[in-house]
Image 1 (cartoon, helix red, strand yellow):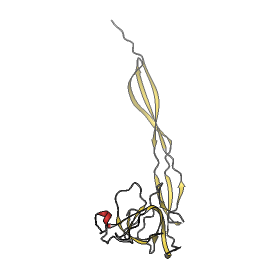
Image 2 (cartoon, rainbow, N blue to C red; image 1 turned 180 degrees about the vertical axis):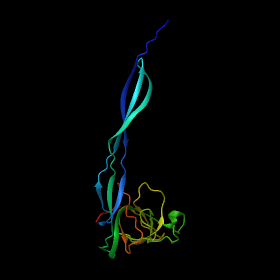
Image 3 (cartoon, rainbow, N blue to C red; image 1 turned 90 degrees about the horizontal axis):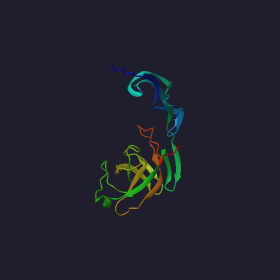
Length: 211
């Protein structure tokens, strides 16, 4: 008769899972537009799980949960953003302008012949100097703006996909086209629209200029 001795052992091992914190945004009417402040720093949560591992003759044969506990509570990051719109004035070579938002954007330019003769914009305007192609997620259609060196324009067209959000395409007719390819200041002119995107994206290139 063969007697087989099986050596059974168990151990408890632990594993940790990270619970990423979330970012919560809170509007603050006491802060100026395009300013932000961190009200609470974020902290990831940590859950520690215990696992009972069973071995027979040194070979693992099973695992089963043996409980879990939170060893670090998750704490969300809270960021306040300003909603107080301040009207400002600026002296320019074209006269005094009144604006409510200042953006840093990359400017290019275009004209009908470049588009194969198509001179009708996304909202039905005729392409000419004073028509500006924009990213409508950043600047709504029909917004009036001022670009130093170009003058006053209206957001009336859009362009193809870009790798970043903050750009404008300055419109011209075929006869007066001027090439643009540089970073510029863009001032959104009064009146202030009824609907405002208070929380524009933050990117490495371009974006709101805090007063």
